[in-house]
Image 1 (cartoon, chains in turn blue, orange):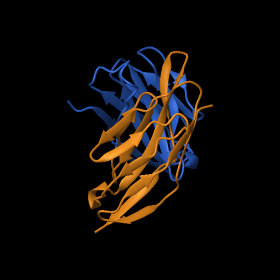
Image 2: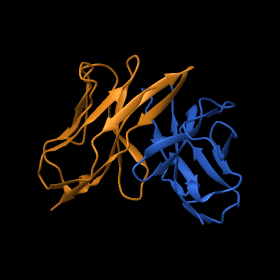
Image 3: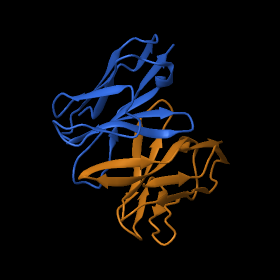
Length: 113
Length: 114
């Protein structure tokens, strides 16, 4: 039981390049989330998927797109990376109804130059 | 909207000292409250939670009580260890349109020295 896995762990992009961050969970959870973590800002929600086939914007969705490929996988895409997207990205999942506890992946550290 | 305010760090303590990290919240309704911990280089892990007023969450010697009258969920530990050095996040559940999300505070970095 691996929990929540994310790939890659580290990535460096040039401004304007695109990439997809991958996330998978093996806990049969319905809901999945993407956050970014910046110094002094805590975690901010980018997008979430309450269930397979649905996605919704969070607090900071601009510049990102997501795909809930199936129940296990939830990807985050940067179409044209900008230096402001330099951050650590975390994927999380949760089961309903269980007190809304979320389980987090180890994170992807992204640098955009 | 719902929000969480937690004390700013960093906090530096000596081993065996008493720890308090303050957390207050603003919310409509009765959210669940959480403390998450992030060790260096890792993702967040749930430390403890409380789902209704006057509930006390506890784990690994840490405790927090859901205080509706003061809208607070302060984290406490009687005797910290070096291994408790981490960033601690207070969070609350936010339910809209049938979807649950978490709203996080900005985090408090704790360093415990031997």
